[in-house]
Image (cartoon, rainbow, N blue to C red; front, top):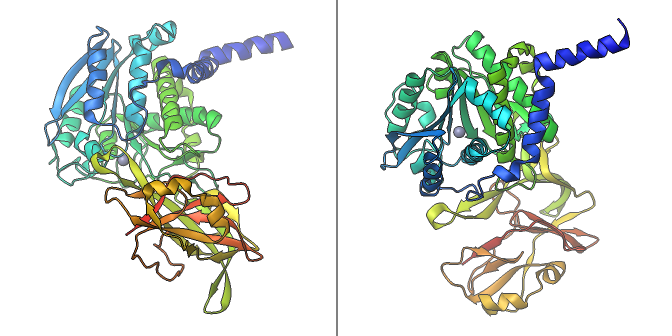
Length: 489
Ligand SMILES: [Zn+2]
């Protein structure tokens, strides 16, 4: 075969498999995302009342059908939003865990995309072959409190058989009424998951849940695996190495496993962590791009060519990440010196109304952490851990803090600042020093699991780094990510 003909057949191959077109639509979706992003949703702690006007906006568009399909325990409406005229039914539900909102936001981006004038031929392809059904924020009572469980204290994802929660009953009833061909079960996972034996966070994790203890693969499950392979290839372009595969042990009480069993090809998507993306807005974008691309491949049916062996090549999920990992630090205890690694996580504490949060960090692990990774790692060889001192001059009130140069005081070895009049409503210190009340006695420093990580790292007796409430600051440059320190009364 001559070169020209080979090229021609290669061209035909790509057209037939649709790979070239899928690649094309994916990069186009990524590049134009800002046009479709639902700007009214821009952080994780979204509430049911915030999405109602957005649903109402789309309900006014004749393309969409909005149906009330149930109510939460506290009486919040659960709504199904449908679009398309195709024979293949695709059902997506998000946020059955109230504190897992990333895909809910992506769903509203997808609505804006579907309602827009752009991507005409691709949308025609999707909406003539598929009917899409979305049930965003299945657990609005949990979202209100930014908690996993519903108001009954039940994990909806363990209620697929007993069906005690109205939210579970709704999900089951909608699934059965649609007899959907494909199901997307949309969650968030901890940001501390990584792709096995790598320092890469599992930004997205997938699972084609098993439908029995034997983990058999029938056509339903195989199709889910193929779609996952397809989506994994997309995520790899934008977050290389940052995909994990969930353990597929059968959980008889979970929705994903049962919906697979009931005949809907079920794809679990977990949004995890991404460096410097606290509100998960980049991960939301990856949801948008990969889910829309998946619709396209389902519509074109070219996913069928994908070999399922590719599924098991996706690295497994592991949970070996810390926000901050410090290695080889010298620690003095009872006049002896030890070498230690320290694993630190910055834990979120919700403020009243659960619309915002502050950080109260913890030491999670100590010792040899060579099998762990950090979003940020500091090699502290040659550095000694030292407790910070209390600054001797007591401030009158919180306003006086503005006159303090915290980096200067940290360099002098002070990590605590006394303030005489501390307002009760103040939860966190805005400067990188812990604030203490007039009579507060700072406990003797002892490195232990569970303590707040606040200390200095000295070289030749001089503090060069400060760790304040788990935030690492370079005292020579003043650089470092910092959100808040602690207040102790
Ligand atoms: Zn979940």
